[in-house]
Image 1 (tube, rainbow, N blue to C red):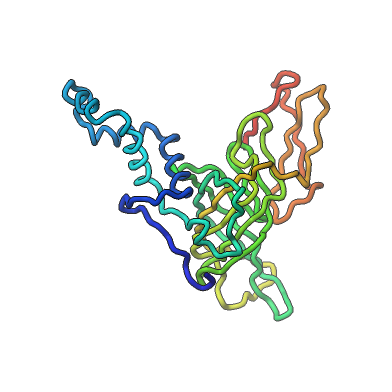
Image 2: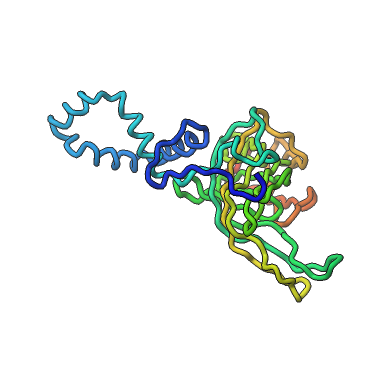
Length: 287
């Protein structure tokens, strides 16, 4: 697979999808999170649905056919599908027990710093800074240096590179990232609560220029785009940097992890408890 682009299936013209998991996840997100949009599209198929004649047509069609129409309409609204697991480079393929939970697209910058190495000054990759968008077009979080992913619902995941594969010569390599710490609300279901693997695929751009840098310490931002496939583990990964538990006599304090390339346990910042909350209440995440 190295050196050539993995096969892709596009739905730009409402093409018929094969029954694979990637299509199902994206269609499911569209149909469940944007029902009003789907209803408006359905009305275009049944302009007389408010009349006696239109209602008779619906009865003749049978309500059992409507789910198939909803799926078809949602499929036309989804972005192009990422490659299926069997089409990935072998080093990036996901174990069968991992569950595909979401597919996010991202645009932003790959960050580089001019550093001196054995052969002189050169650009050193420091990570990415980008916005994460779900299949409905909503901004849901950010990706930051250190393979740190933060969702707007307050959950986050720290990961580490497990494998990479250069698929196109002019773009960032595709990568498989393994979660090493998850932070999430323990009461509400959150986006990154039990994430085990993240695949970065379909990358575009993000590589520094071929010429060397000239000023040590200078930085460079290179625009890039990618698709992130989010996999949930059958069991939540064991935290390697646990946040100290607050005494039971008062509400727990929130711990905020600073933005940085590789935060350490000592870098956690503990914020004071919100005194407006009743004693023992759990403060909701707000970042």
